[in-house]
Amino acid sequence: MIQVNQDICVGCLRCLNVCNFRVFDPVDGRVAANPKRGCMGCMHCAAVCPMGAISWNGEPAAHEEVESYDDNIKEQLVRLVRQRRSYRHFREHPVDEEILKEALELVSWAPSAKNQHPTKWIVVRSKERMDDMMEKILAWIDETGTSAEIAEEYQHGNNVVMGTASTLILAYAPDDAVNPKQDTAIAMATLELLLQSQGVGTCWGGYLTRMLNAVPTLREDFALPAGHSFYGAFMLGYPQDEDYLRVPRRLKQADITWK
Ligand SMILES: Cc1cc2nc3c(=O)[nH]c(=O)nc-3n(C[C@H](O)[C@H](O)[C@H](O)COP(=O)(O)O)c2cc1C
Image 1: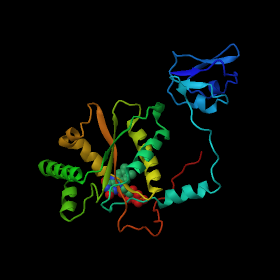
Image 2: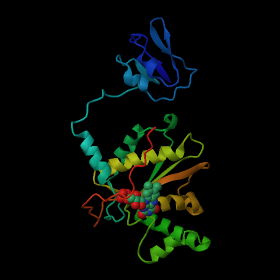
Image 3: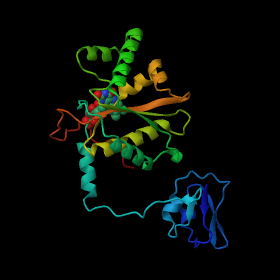
Image 4: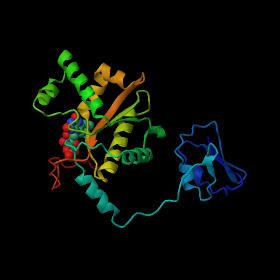
């Protein structure tokens, strides 16, 4: 629960002005949080409080003071956006656990509908498990005749579901979250940039996501809770024999209507 320390508050009203849901009231020259209003825990109030007077369940509701960016931040970001690529061929070595953990933690600062952050992650680093998943996918395709091109490509040594990933990240969320699909896509787009900035190759697994939801044995293996679905997946690893030397041309330009 959000609270304002009345001994510190100077009544500047910045928290009140920034709050998206009118959680704060001015009281006797200070500000008090009304527990009956729907606080979504975005902590913007704490981020603007010059006194550090805002807490969440008794703990400080904000971290360190913000810092300005280096002068070349824009150039670096543009480079990352243009040079990020989909990687499908990887070395055997799984991605360092610390890199993954740090990136997944950082994704909590991406935006999400009503600040719900509904996405949960499963990191698969066992080659045996990946082989087992692939076996189950191929058996299901054989049985149902769905997505036959996956089996066809696989026979030719091309795994369009996982590439030669050393690691998989599977993203799932409750279906009744406010916006699980977009929240997961935003989290994954953020994650991808963070990982690629550290030399980790990633590729969105559209096929993989579809298979995770469609193949009943996979849902069972991962003990997907009822009312949840997979909303995205990455194949990833340290790239092998896949050095992109140039930024590829894009055939589509931004289609913008100015009003
Ligand atoms: C939602 C989504 C699903 C995708 N699914 C697959 C997939 O199943 N297999 C694959 O090899 N690439 C997949 N991709 C990667 C795209 O093919 C790739 O982003 C596109 O060709 C552009 O290449 P680039 O990412 O290197 O710029 C997917 C991308 C997105 C955004």
